[in-house]
Image (tube, rainbow, N blue to C red):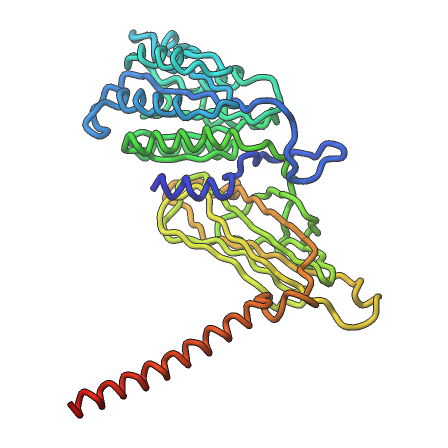
Length: 424
């Protein structure tokens, strides 16, 4: 459900800046917010004739989209520059060449005037063709300039009608420019062909695809994506995990991106000094339609293969992001200073049990985001005892003893009262 997606994405920031091949600027730290430019979002709405169909909560698809847009405009964060582009809104005729040029910027990307934007949305009426490819090219141009987050959110109820300009190829072309633009797609009452096309568009840029059949779902999802654009811009480091620990790249604290094939294992290495604590989390994005019943696991293993800690999560429905995390408190070693200075090699294994739905391409792999944090552990000589419970052991023991004594006392009182009752 969309509400589950929103919670998951809120927790993980849903891979807000995942793009392949990004490099750190000089002096930057992996995962550090960069840039002062405002985030930009361009809402790309299909206004073709098929939007007249009345199959979303008893109203037309166009009415549902207008209602959702009005609520989204009310909730858009002040720092987000938002625009609205249409496709198929102006030309009602049968000339294909003209219909495939029918895309226009309804509201320019910039500081949001909510009243003006709502007025523009109110004028829309289902009209013509579905030129998704040409509209994506124009929507990308609308977002040109600046270093902040850039997102296109495409809402459509049908596949492109202007081939051979393949929307998937257009999305790949946009991704190849390296401008950090993500395209998310939403399919209104989708069929198989439309679902495949919209999934392909999203997949090409590391975005997400979602099927929508209710107005509330549409509102929630668009709000989620706009909010995601407002998250601080981060610069993840592209890394390639290995098939085994011995060949895995060594990671320091930071944010990393990779791609993992369906049901694949990927390995990474982290050096942990005595007294340090390793905290790690992984998010795998289901950026295309997947089968139900799946999971993601993150294991910390010694370089000799012994598992030391594990984190895992499972799901049964369509979610945008699946996340798991772990924490490995490493105790101080006894011995001389040289022994204490030696680092322990911890191998992180990321695994998933996703499987592709029928007809869905399995390449490239699923977008993966890995966060690694190596910090100084707690002072084990003072407040922290075994298993990190610290002085809580004393409280736990006191509660157990108090409960035992209270039980004995209550039992004695009950027996005494029963004896008195029998006597009387």
